[in-house]
Figure (tube, rainbow, N blue to C red):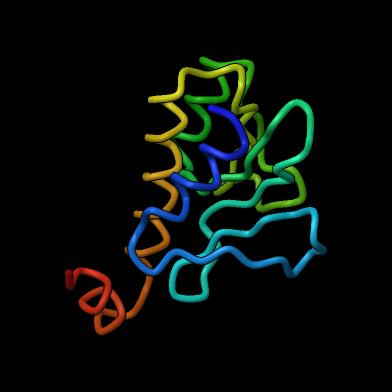
Length: 117
């Protein structure tokens, strides 16, 4: 997965937006105003910070050298993923899981609005 594919995939989710609160070189992908992914899309190697279930985060870090505790994030809930070192399908699943975790914490009324076609 390259930077363009990462960005396009993040923006496919319902209500997903790209913002730049940390400067124009850091893309922050949000749903309903809450961050689910963060990446410097021009960085080499390409990395992304993704929210993760704490127990799964530990297991992923143990199993994959390309997954580390979230850089400048709550290390219990966020992983930094070196995108180019993992299979595309796995990165897509990690992004989707991150989005789903954030949506699950949103108020019910917002979740219902996101479920509408």
